[in-house]
Length: 325
Image (cartoon, rainbow, N blue to C red; front, top):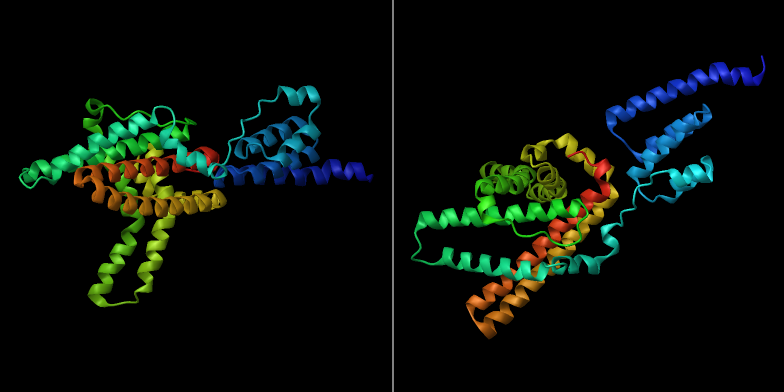
């Protein structure tokens, strides 16, 4: 039997089965650029050119601007076909522009948003701290302030995830009243999920004893888990998604490179914000008094809060197709 006939019958059946298996794997485990490239190669061996091009286009949506995928498409397509392809816009990784991250809270009308927000929050915190202020009113105002800031954190994250390069406006107080508790829950519940094992073990350790290093391991795992859990909660508006351990871990695994860099960036900005917080607090306290010091410290706090939310939003935008919130 000629070799071509063997390729047409037996080999073709094997390749078709491999395609079916790979499609089933994608349906079960989710999309990945690597799987789509493998599928495109199988389609090419089966002389299914259009299917191969379609699969490579999906791979390019998963990894915008990847030179190897673009080169493969150019090799398969004619010049006219390649010109007609709707190629996704390449999203610049957030870590390539660290100065841009520092500038983000000041972009657009960001300066006015920061100053206005700082004045509002500082006055509210001052009222809450008054010793003569009614206890229940203090609790209500504290919950309102935490929920309002949580709402803005979510707004910054979502606007960054949609590609906005300047901070969004502060939420209208009249629109946010009914969502205070929900916004607070969206931000705080992922933290509860991430650090509950460490807290539970700490309680157990004090009651029954146990090695202390386990607490640090659980805290480290919580720090690893929390950002992705927060993304899952804030982007979808469903806090319970942060307790989907399999989905969160799979998302971290699929974007491990970008996620690790985001964790390092967040740690870097936490360090910078802590230093700035201390220096600004000491300097303004010595020169201008308690109220101005509180204003300056609150300005720094809001500034870095916007950067943290922006990094998480940019991470989601860059890896959206591989994250399963």
